[in-house]
Length: 187
Image (cartoon, rainbow, N blue to C red; front, side, top):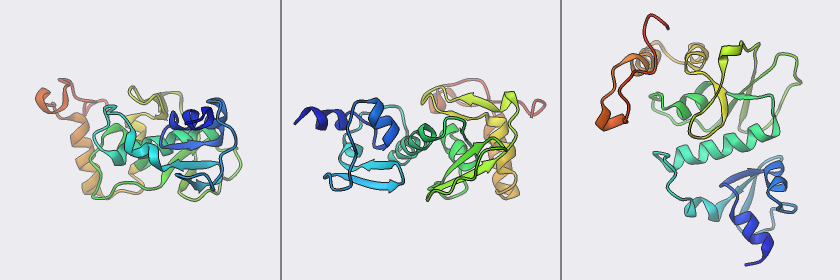
């Protein structure tokens, strides 16, 4: 395995050209075995997906979603992960479907973004809306802001399930935490 192949093998399962360049990998090409162009500037490194170490993600789907979100956010430094993508990363109960689209929140005055598999919401963000995910380090909307964003697209039953998940007292043996994510009075 050459030096270039070792550098690419060290990348996550989905990578942007910016991330690859920062890691020292040269030009990414679709002719390279195991590389598939997912979108303009975003590549899926197929052989690595099977070799990922256990990193605390409960499912390969969530691991791949986090890698895709990280690659897209690297192209838009002013963006936050929001809506269903943020809900999946926070661990919200999802309404029967796993998000395939990466939802981003960008400032109102930014230009429109047209990219397959990415939905951009141009929103004026408040300072308390921005947070960093404790395990992945990805910039995303806070749990409260994510819930508020989902109110526009989810059904009432799905929102009630998400609110219940946020305010209920967890059981240590299932979730390794003892405090709820939020309280009803604060919501």
